[in-house]
Length: 181
Image (cartoon, rainbow, N blue to C red; front, side):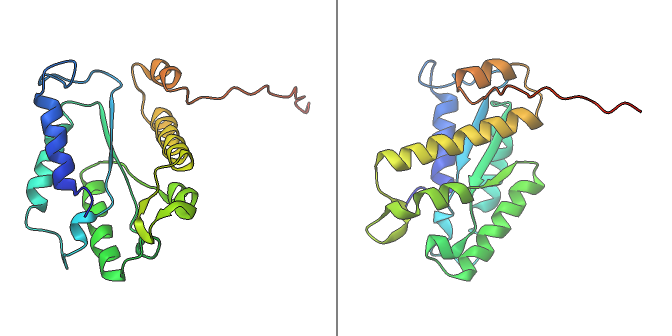
């Protein structure tokens, strides 16, 4: 089984408490900081409902917002693509809805799923091969998130963020003539 959200939260907690530069040293990551949590619902593989620890996970995630300006989730409840049954999709949808109710943006990783489908590892739909195409798909997905977040939230350091992550494009606009009258 891959990383559960509980395990990811433990790693985040360790990062918060670890001294700088490895961690945050119990201080804020700063204005314009963004924590992207990728959650594939591994904890629901053997569950028929949200796990008993779910409320504890949600309380911890609420605390995380003190350390990062924006905390968002990248996930998917597409049970068919993951090779799972509909009941898993129902639990995953319920989990994503609870995160949204807490004002966490939850983005569907549909494009990443499409881009990586040819690279499913050993017939296990929840695992991809380690190859350049999969890394490129991750890079593209993260760029989309940073761009989208920058457009919808007014980061104090937005320009610095998009410049650092090189997630911008410039286009020459054609000359236009406005109709008179």
